[in-house]
Image 1 (cartoon, rainbow, N blue to C red):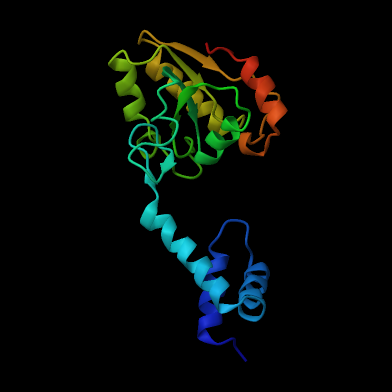
Image 2: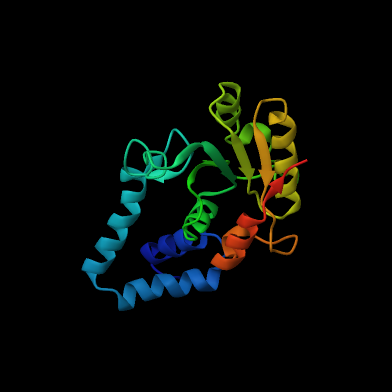
Length: 200
């Protein structure tokens, strides 16, 4: 005996999310069916549709926004000559929570990974180099994760940008090698931020 098609379709949708296995997806689908009111499900589905309808990528940094530019890039009080490079939007929001950083960001949308088939051309790098080439940047802070992929990416960016008139620093992580920036607590991120050093 199988679930009705509508339930199977929803299970498949939940199962496509990261870290959601078949049993968890099944539990989520049945919870939506049996525990949620129709109005709640409509609100839920509208929120999902709104992600693609109302949200786009900031052309300046790669952050998400509902406006032409994201809140960071459109803020004139921030230092637009200081750029912090992160792997993901989630990392960007982790840094923002400490209320310490006053520059802008550059989101790579990943890290170089041979095993996953992610190369330089798959990342958002060209616009960062263009800013350096045009003399728009004083300092770049490399905040890629303390993983093999993150370090490989940081080293590539350092080699790519070192000949421009730009200071390149790297966050001094209070994290073990293999740690993920987005899972760090705010104090750890703050200490790493304060202890950044010139990247060589």
